[in-house]
Amino acid sequence: MRVVKSLILSAVFVALLPGLASAQDRKIHFNIGAGPTFAGGDLGNIFSTGFGPTLGVTFDVTPRIGLQFEYSYKWFSVEDYEDAFAGRFSANHNMHVLNYNLIANLNAPESKARFYVVGGAGSYNRSVEITQYVGSGIICDPYFYICGTYPINEVIGERGGWDFGFNIGGGVGFKIAETAEFYVDFKYHYVSGPDVNTTGIPTPYTGTKSATGYYYPITFGFRF
Image 1 (tube, rainbow, N blue to C red):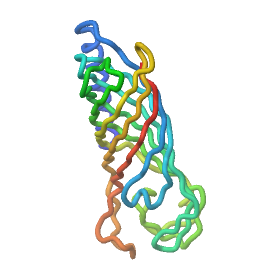
Image 2: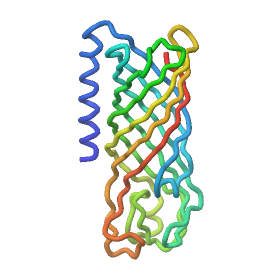
Image 3: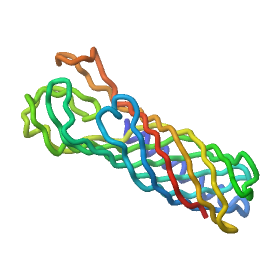
């Protein structure tokens, strides 16, 4: 179901774009950028600040409203993280992000400083690769997508999947040419993750623990 939801959302968005583009003569804008991403909650206690690029295209619906598709890649790492069972991990966490947004300009788009808000749904492919593990083999951490007792050689490896989420935020663009600007934006991403059943594992959790994640990227880039 996690994969199906993501595919349906992508298909609906892509199907809408040709109709919007052909309905009337609309401007098309491209953006490219990069910046840090801060992980929130328990996820942020495990992985370092992430980094990665962002690419996007926006179709103007009106001078103030646009429909945006944006792709981002995020990379996080951890060295010698110790879990509740005194297991020690080195790992990385990467994420492919597909966002389908509405973007609204708060002032005239041709202003020297264009302020905007943005938000919409998203499809998030998150994966975690455990590259080193030293411990008893008892592991129960939803952000590593693993919970149970395992032979140590089975802990090393990559696991993850597609999840549904949304983002909301805002930014400002500074005009640097007739059709180009430098922009900075900040977003909050909520990514709904699967639940890990902790029953029978002596953990500080009870029942289930969710792999839902919260991310806060700051992007510096150019729009033209």
